[in-house]
Image 1 (cartoon, rainbow, N blue to C red):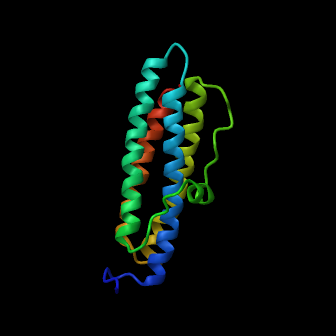
Image 2 (image 1 turned 90 degrees about the vertical axis):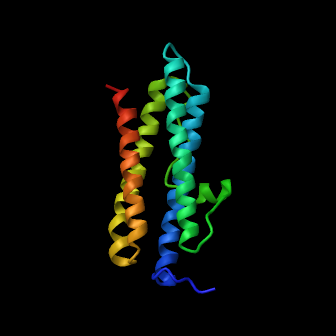
Length: 157
């Protein structure tokens, strides 16, 4: 069936490939935030347990919206752990400490990495691929990640 959204097949393919990488990053960040929620220890346990929960709930919504955007431009979203690990720019947790500061620092760096990746795709999606909808969509995601990063960073002062 022909896709009638006004974007060439080649452009939709290129955008979908970048969105698949973003989805993988979002999934890994979600998993790492869940890990922080489940395993944080220390005198600030309760407040940090709730804080990480609020963060992973927002990341869950982001993941869903990225996957749905991939589908809306006519492609299938990756949905296996293997595909996510092959596509992600992020790494698994390297520090085995379960204190809030360790989790906060690592999650903050991951948000920064995602923000940088998104920022690098805003203009190409619009100008090179003529997909203004996805460009606008990821601009909103970038703003959400900037706010999530701010919340993490505020705990580190």
